[in-house]
Length: 263
Image 1 (cartoon, rainbow, N blue to C red):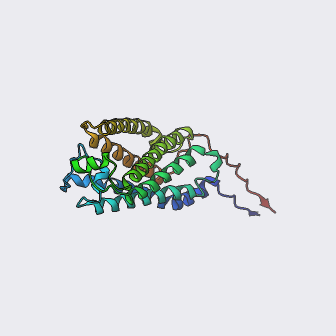
Image 2: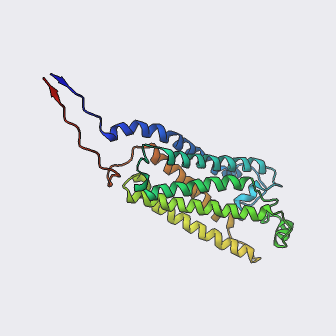
Image 3: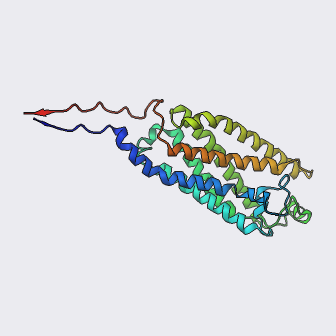
């Protein structure tokens, strides 16, 4: 009597593929998160800017001595996050039924927007640092600075909108689909903290635009950027692990084929 071997369960076959396809995304997102926190070097390197008041973008201004370094790290961070998001979207094992996981797809698309806009942002640096240079601030108010100042504001806004959207969408996906338990648990407080930091930053920008002195604009924006980096690291950790099976699966696995005996 010969026995025909049973087919492996779909989940078992997918596990090895999932590890191979998401591995590059995990590495890219982790390295992107690290590069996105390059501004912490100002804690050990004298930059001449006040981290309590200055924009993070001012570290990469064209007239700053370390501007080239911070522009390079921003470019690397943006490209790595873009690659990580696109790689996750292209992973066939995880997203074989993409139409059943719209929140996940939308979240990674928003993350790709964040990465692309961050990379573009690094190519559109400020010409000077308005919060520490009164002449620069006066020129900016009078509209005498290069057009890159306006373009930089647009790309920075796009980057932060993409980051916020990705945080919200991927957190909803983690909770809705029963996947990524760490993100489902830690995502909501991170999203709330990011929203609070964003409101803080926008309020300080409005005060600065009105011609008044800011109170801890730099602290609010650095907290905003740090939380995005922490979220990226958390997401990478979730992608590196096998998804939880607690939620409703996208496609119910077929029943196993019983052994057949031939006489």
